[in-house]
Amino acid sequence: MDEVIPAHTAARSHACLAVALIGFMGAGKTTVGQELAARLGWRFADLDQLIEAREQRTVEQIFREDGEAEFRRMESLAVRDAVGSLKHGSLVLALGGGAFIEPRVQECLRRAQIPAVFLDAPVVELFRRCERPGVERPLRRDQEQFRKLYEQRRPEYLKAAVCIETAGKQIVDVAKEIILGLNLVPVSGVCD
Ligand code: S3P
Image 1 (cartoon, helix red, strand yellow):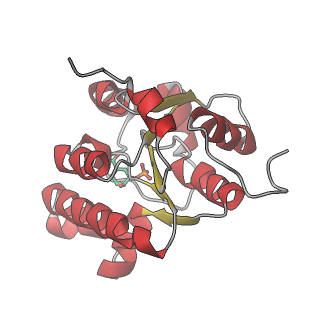
Image 2 (image 1 turned 180 degrees about the vertical axis):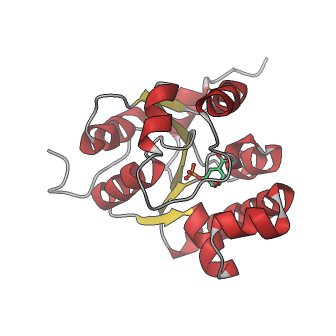
């Protein structure tokens, strides 16, 4: 009989070429991802930014002009391309909040053996963090709609190899937790 290896153990047991940060809007995927990449000496990419650069439009414009389904298609393609870019070096990839919900995205990461790390926080905290100006989020309307969407998605996020509660923690500490959780090797001098 095949031995069943828990996802967490499986993630530890292979040389990791990439890590995907997943979680709801406001989870801190981009900020933590940048810190993590710096500590590992890996490249960092943010899926929304990759799509915006390719499309020369903001995510908000894409939703408005082409609709959500088309945006999801773009996300899947961007994940596939990011996975294809691993020959250029290891990568921390921050996914948009809805990307991991797409079965084709999960399948792409699974095939490439890229562990997902779920960054979580209480939903009120996530909503509040998204209040900061800068990024327009078409799927953040009111608190009630935001909470429902979060609860609907959370079971999918929980499929991640590592799940981290981020509330009350510093970005550097979350990055260190990921390094420990996945047994990654930081570049010398940055992991105190
Ligand atoms: C989305 C999250 C956003 C962005 C888009 C849709 C979602 O990314 O991809 O607005 O479906 O949750 P962030 O999670 O980085 O805000």
